[in-house]
Image (cartoon, rainbow, N blue to C red; front, side, top):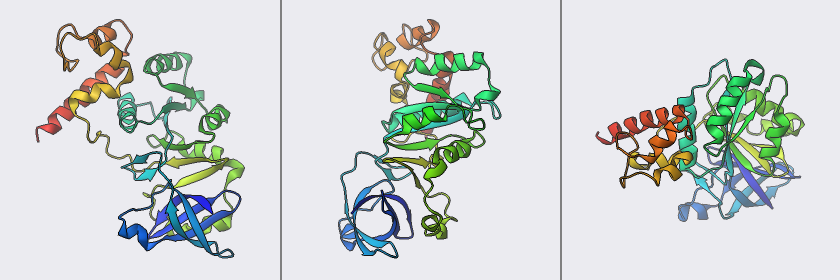
Length: 291
């Protein structure tokens, strides 16, 4: 039987099998010998021990399509970043840091601005101009009014998506609207209630038709590990093509003359807010390297 690990707590792995339900499993000892640890998001084969109690053993981990380090999760296909149009006002510096982290992981990204009912046309136009130039899909929703949720469902369909964003933006409301009638039965949920105090664990939520979302608590450090300051520009997709016109190899796009990126900012090809946030993040990364 093949399913997906949706949560792991204290050595137990909760495997959701479509059309069969949730199984509480232990991992075979062979995984420890091979120093392989099952991850949330893994597609696995299980042997059922007791069908009535829905218990079993994880016997095989299928090949991973991808693997994130923090949080440790496998087979994520894309990211959905949720910010609000107002209340709270969007912190674009924080948004750009999230984008850098997702870019470093190689994930396709959709930006969702929730609370559309509180915004205005000028803000929507500005955000679309800023982030669509960078190659991102930008959508607007009002979870409170149910607007735009069908569009989100279409983006998520058939994929495993990590959802991230600051508190207060309506993430929970969006997720609850997405879950709707697809909630697993109360009995299945109660099986993993013992772990509800471990709210920092990653957990996948099944939406139907091989579609899962994960509210991502693990993106707490907003520095990008393993990326040198000099390569930060590669995490800003709209910087890459203009950088080929820089006079100097290894241009940092800060003080150098004849810099293609700075010229693109002046020409309006790159949003000034994106460039200013690049400068701040670059400065922090360069300072961190000195210590």
